[in-house]
Image (cartoon, rainbow, N blue to C red):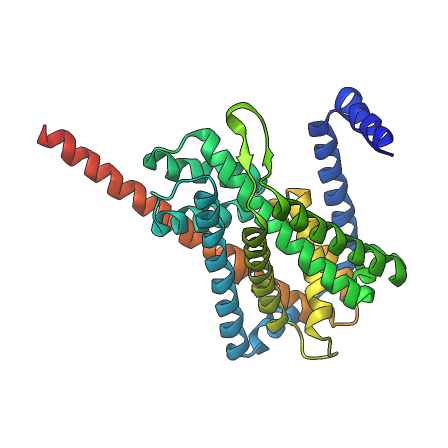
Amino acid sequence: MRSVLSAIARFFAEKIGWHRFGVIFSLTIITVAAFVLYHKLQGIHVDKVLDAMATVEYRDVAIAALFVAMGYGTLTFYDLFALRTIGRKDVPYRVAALAGFTSYAVGHNVGASVFTGGAVRYHIYSSWGLSAVEVAKICFIAGLTFWLGNITILGLGIAYEPSAATDIDQLPTWLNRSIGIFALIVLVSYVAWVWLAPRMIGRLNWEVRLPGGPLTLLQVVLGICDMGSCAAAMYMLMPNEPYMDFAGIGVIFVCATLLGFLSHSPGGLGVFDAAMLVALWEFDREELLAGLLLFRLLYYITPFVFALTILGSRELVLGVTRSRKIAGK
């Protein structure tokens, strides 16, 4: 089995190229999403969508905003955890919070978050003496935290309520439940692997020591808090009728979010929305679309504006400081 997988990997690397395959995969997701959206949005009345947005209770919007704030707050600890993992204990939390918040807020909206978020991180951390390799390690550890949390949520959610995933992937419920259980087995195996002995990956100056067992569990908790907060925000903005429990919406939300992430579309635009509209077909389309638009406003647009304001203000302050130093000489 291992030799077969190695042969497949060599074929993609030599004949197609992983980068080219990734581009084709992303374009395929975006194309399918665009086709789905075209059909799903036919007959939508903009006035009804605006009316539905206006009728959402302010209390629900405020609670959703609080959950969004909690989610972004958790993202700041992604960076702090990664900094401590690579041994940079000299970088304070305020810098990790700045880099974490702004990199994710920009990366979520611009797309290709691995590169855009990494560029923002490097711009901030380089002033503290971190090299490009160290920033790459931070991105890797933060990404690992993200995926560990998502695998946990998806594994538990799909195993508990496989029908929610069926609404997106159209697979039988028994197969989805099997996928969820398999994901949990992989997760437990990974935790056991890093718990038994120190693990290093990479080579030369790009070696990264993976967090041990207890710290990996902390990564899982951080990832759950992040995605769980986002799912809770979406849940608060959902239409009241028909009733759907948090577990079902949470599974659908995480699946839709990951599809958007894999597409590299800015903010998962189109892909996330198409997946939500397909999976939540029971809801009134105008009311559901109103909830999706409010979520985008809270989770994407507002943090993006804040991040650009913070980064712009920081550059202004640094520029004035440098000018004063030059004038003082």
